[in-house]
Amino acid sequence: MPSASLISSSSASVEASMGSRAFERIELRSSFAEADAAWRELLSGGVATPYQTPDFLRAWADNVGRQEKVELALAIARRADGRAVALLPLGVSRRFGLRVASYLGGTHVNYNLPVFARDAAEAFTPAEAARLLREVAAAARIDLFALSNQPERWRDAPNPLAGLPHQPSPDFAYSGRLEASVEAHLKRYVSAKTRSAQRRKLRRFEERGEVRIYRAETEADRAHVLDAYFAQKAQRLAARGIDNVFAEPGVEDFIRTAAGLRDAPASIDLYGFDLDGQTIATFGVIADRDRMCGMFNSITSCDLARYSPGELLLTFMVEDAIGRGMSEFDLGVGAAAYKALFCPDVDPLFDTILGVSPLGRAGAGVYAAKRAAKAWVKSNPAVYAFATRIRKLRAKNVEAEPDAAPDKPDA
Image 1 (spheres, rainbow, N blue to C red):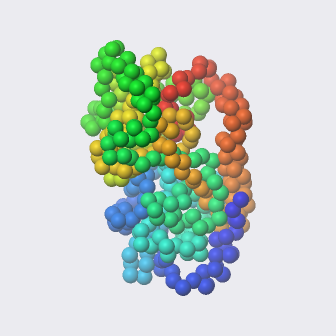
Image 2: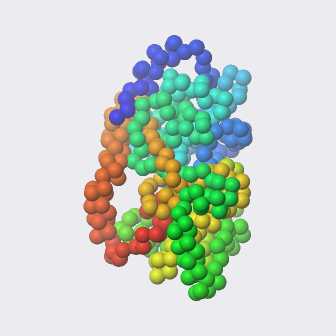
Image 3: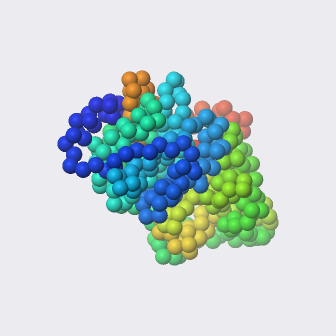
């Protein structure tokens, strides 16, 4: 378990022995407009996952964050010459009397990372990373940092916070390199037997009607995909006894805003699999020029699910990502059998849980223990199976679902 007193004590003595400083000052911004110029400058040549973009996180903050009373704390670290070298896209919320800072986006973000200049990464030693959080805490009156689901590296650049005390996140993430063509990609990652089975499944759909597998590029198509997604997700989660996070206040508006349906720029892409105009599988992704990240998905609950429309849709998505010049593809956090077909690499993630104030240090222990307990349940097959059975008993419909269904229960 991490040391809860790092920021307020030990970092100060280490800092005194440093030869250089990664940044000179912190600027705290409480609106996206105030942080936009520095943010986009960092994104133009810096390091960030596709999730850490202002358009996407603004859509979340304006809808979900507002409902949850999250206070924006966009912290920009600048050098003496004024150049921005890092940005922490944080939100502060009240929990049990504590001001807790977390990455914006909540459970809808699979990878969290500061946005930082690539040439500044090495300057963020553990002491400088601790100073960064300490100064942000002072500016935003933060008691506790609860920063989850962080990769240790991103595109060969070290995460500036990886040197601080941390613990494993409850879930791994799953990713893979993309080959030059979908044929080469499937040949490398998917067995000949599985590829043959996919062709047979597609023929089954074609025998039943007109098949359309597509990226939704018009407003009508995006609305069509999302209408199917929200209906399918609600039905399948209810059948499994899982709380539907997408039914929580502001979440549907967030997704529709991010999809460009609320007079805002689209920051996510949507994919659909239609049979005679009826959507039977959906997927939402967020992407930059190099990587496509799977966010959420659904499939029909009718008997057509046995032909794995989600798997066929994923094959199309991989082909589309390759055609758009991307080199990486991921399906986010949480284990699922279907992910191995497309994302063979396992990405360990970590949580930074650090208290700043006396109450925050006490709260850090509780928060860390809760995350560790969740990780233990998920790593213990017998315990996790028992928890899954209990969850299903809560549901009215406990009918087993097809194994091939690429559903993401905790998306």
